[in-house]
Image (cartoon, rainbow, N blue to C red):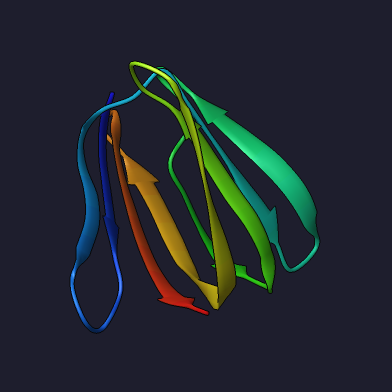
Length: 78
């Protein structure tokens, strides 16, 4: 799936990913290939994604949108 992670300052990641795990305001959840469409707010915690290797970003909050096998995440980072 296509993953884009942006902060107000810059693009943090843009490319293909196998999975994305985010700290949703109602609990942590994972997005995999062909995930159902969703929009959710995010709370402070760890956002991780698996591309060629696992990466982790500490975030202060943000939003995630999943649609048509594209994941867009807008976050505020520490």
